[in-house]
Length: 114
Image 1 (cartoon, one colour):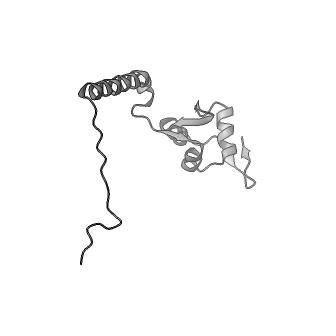
Image 2 (cartoon, one colour):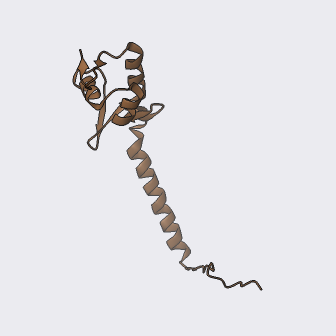
Image 3 (cartoon, one colour):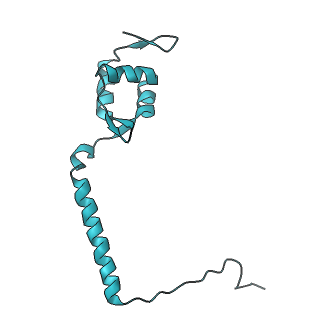
């Protein structure tokens, strides 16, 4: 025999509120969405169509060490942006450096030759 009142039974809670309160909440949510869109709109040109990479992704993509990446940054060879103490690099900048040829080679001990 099948038990319709098994452990998987779920209950539904119904809450009744006035329509005016619901409409007020809808308006508040709509205003919050507009504020969020307005606050982020100025950043759209920066991020649109551009993929950003972190340190690890750049090192993997370029097959370099973190120390070599730091050298590229120190020498101004690879532009980056800092957000919350983390560096990000435009994919197009990394690709351009790859296509130009890496300016340093890596020794067996992990250091770089200039």
